Length: 257
Image (cartoon, rainbow, N blue to C red; front, side, top):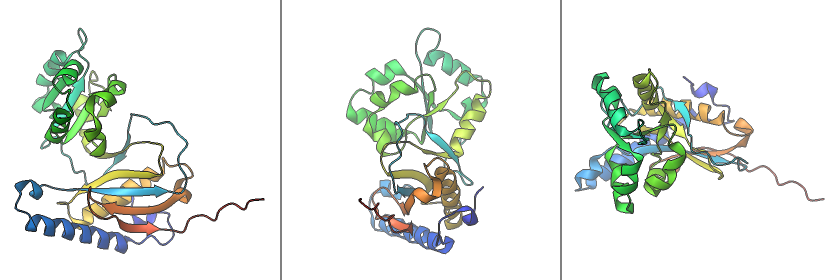
């Protein structure tokens, strides 16, 4: 896995990363201590925010880019995982359930939902939002991925819980689930700001720092012009201020002739 020395940004400091992580953990901890709600005791997601100098001229794609983590925050054994599948004749959730029943611990999947059920039972905004809250990770038969954005709603995109495509019929299905759990994901879009999950607040400072370095190095591989296109890197939770890990001055504007 990547280390701080693999980050090719002038002035990048692993000490600054450690300070930012510790500060964010302290912020989350103090807020949880002051809250009377049991819900506020739950882990908070740490996001790495990557600001680019120029917008990537690429079409939006539904298929995410997997970025391996040295310290995953989702475990196939302990997580609640939902799988979206086709439900045409012979390809439905019944056959998927039969396949999972043959696997030890169902390959890590706890719930299978067919597209027809997703369209009917989870039609309202509220039901989509509740579904998003119920599971730690969402997987999908790669054949249904293009149909999902309109069916799952905005909550999945806001929480960065878009389904991860896998091959449901493959013999190595459990290995695919394990691989999906051991990575975080980068979703391509047309903007200059990219948010990527890097850790949970309950993880150790050292593990979060290592995750940040690994994710940053792998994410930049998929950015046009690589390191030279990175304007800034921040760390934040869903509703905290963004703590700077790296910033540089914008490129000088091209001279107008």
